[in-house]
Length: 609
Image 1 (cartoon, rainbow, N blue to C red):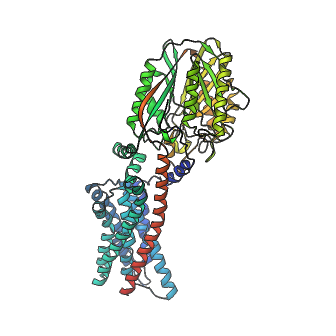
Image 2 (cartoon, rainbow, N blue to C red):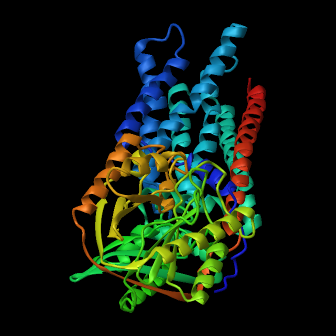
Image 3 (spheres, rainbow, N blue to C red):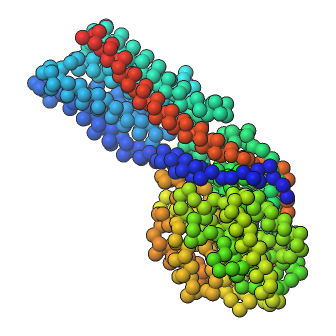
């Protein structure tokens, strides 16, 4: 089989970038909580402008009219205005923006008060400093609403303006500044808008240069996809991916265990990488395949196959196509021609591969553990599968266990010394399993634990599942955890614990990229969930599987899926590099435009004194 991307390596930088971007995801506080803090912050604003000799009644008037009412009314109006003009700005995000809008004047007022203490008098009057603060407020509000609601200035500006305009009107009502101060207020707002527009344009440049698309325009769809799995947001992002896809021929292999009453378990092995991120494209592949294949195929196991981000699927349509091909393959699996089985064997001590003959299939699990192990280039597996097919032996079902995580280490690229060692170890393990195989009966049992939290446990929706095979005088447990790799060292500890329950075992992960949508990005299993709980879960699910052992036969098949759109060679690396440039540009522009705004507004203040 040939693919257009077989020889390209996965870059470890992708994992670092995923970790970086995930830190920008957070959940806004509940609306009521944000409003409560807003009230407190507006009170702090009022305290900072409270002059000695001013009565409490006057202080409460300033707090209520100048700070609290504009903040609350502005928050009340922002969402309806934004939504009416084609944006989408939920109340909880709006309340957080209202809180930040009230908080932004605090450092300005602190500097103003500090300067007054240093020189013995106020550098500018109270109304002027309050009008001055509306420029930075608009700057922050507009960059936010433009990014997360509507990425067009005419449609986002009215919602951005509502709070600072209300504040200016309140200052005018309470302090009655002269006409020059009101004209200055308009200039402050203009400067705030121009600096926000300059920042947004600078942040947009990297993605426009590389992909011809606005990066800022993807902020809202990304937030809505991660936050609520909004179908329109998902479609927008996947359409962008699809525009850069290339065609590749993929293979799907399936190993199914059938009892007299029907399928008990199915190991689905599509040559698809479960990325790029969240639930986009092939991300969350285990759950997507399980949902599409349905319950009629027994318990579905979707371990990681040898491939990298080059074989990410851009949209759900490609996932459906792979699932449809897998379903057709399962419907047409041939009756087994052999009943020969073997224990789980490695060809040599310390082998990176262990194999088990299961009738017409030889199931091989590859791992460099206890050393770091990560993605295996698809070309390595492709060559091994072709060799096995030409040799006329049992069908090779190859799994990348993906079970020993250490940052930036463990990838195997085609032609490298590590790839050559893996290939030799796979051949050795297959030969050992074939030579040791004898005709015999087989029993199989399965069990499942779900209900885990990505944020709390680092485990995806497919949970922890076990397949126990009782044959050749030994019981072998295959444990599959729905997560992105396993912290280095945990695999060995889990295998040691399983030694008292079964004769042989392997612990694998799915490499599901849905677990990236939390702070920390990569989120390997074991980073969040405690080892004791993880170990208890693994032992429990294997013990449950043992109680459900039943006689079964093994059927296996493999087929090509031609011309499937995939993200292709280095596309993910290009995107992540551009996003990294965007974040860098945004960080620099954020500081520079803020300083430019403060400096230009201060010059204007100097003329008004």
